Length: 416
Ligand SMILES: *Cc1c(COP(=O)(O)O)cnc(C)c1O
Image (cartoon, protein in one colour):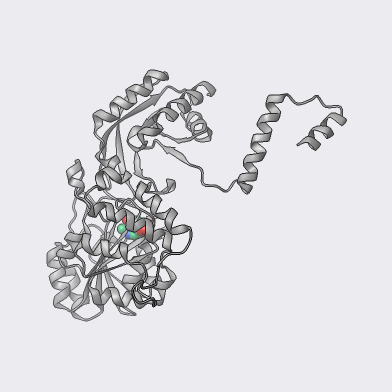
């Protein structure tokens, strides 16, 4: 920097002001700490979408973050039996929690739910996997269930029609042995409305088992608590699906479970054991850091403190009155309106469902410019546009960030 300034002065330039020099020094030091500017930028999520895939889905509970620090540094008894001193089963705490929480005989953790579905489908070998046509969904990011089935080596058998599929429709492929598995897929990010019908779950399970085939449920989010307690539709729970006869269920670790990215498989011991031996399970296995974070997250459900300790559930459970009071406090310090909003859960769960919420409405002649000023500011704030105004939903903002949010809003309005 000194050399640059000398060159500038030698070329007849004006000396740089002390404040500008200081600012440039800070910027250069920041680059030094983060060469290439590759660090993940922390954001305040004011979109009101609790599980925002572009913002990293679930924020972790503090217990998970602490567990990761322990797991990342140093050595652990990851695959060593402390009693015998020999190689043991890979760290099983997360799987033991899953067994207890779902009532399954066994469980396995993999890298993400897409891998979990692939591994489950692989059990069918080269035989057919039947899927209702209304459930052949694209999850997001161009990932499509039919592709996952094919890439896992399964032969996809489409059953029924887009809007209506009945249990009877599965009879023929099962009776002829063309299908050895029925894969049920949570419709994730869309809702079928109008003239529709899907197979009765119990009837379908009975039919599949009568033909000696398997039922695999891809639950997507997989709620470990009952969402209907929060004024939302009931999201399928792994325990009820297993109790209802599903042979295996799969779901994500970073959707409604509220922990790290992972794929959770639970079900019959013999099937889980076969998946564990699949070389692809090794190719998609999670590392010690993920296993530690997931075990810590699942432990919170078992301790009965999920609603308080897991950010996703804390945000779902947040009462509208409290959100309104926070909005009023922020609005008292910056010139913005307090507005009533609707938040969504996101992450492919509860499509079409919303929670009443409160937040800030920002005056702006150019909402696009203001949204971008908020995003480029420090801290980075992600807002949304409703009609022609910029709104900030407080449901997805941790209360500790309210003050910083108010200041960021003040600066963005002043700058725009
Ligand atoms: C999200 C989702 C997946 C993929 O899960 P990832 O953990 O993102 O791999 C698969 N199936 C359904 C129904 C989903 O909603």
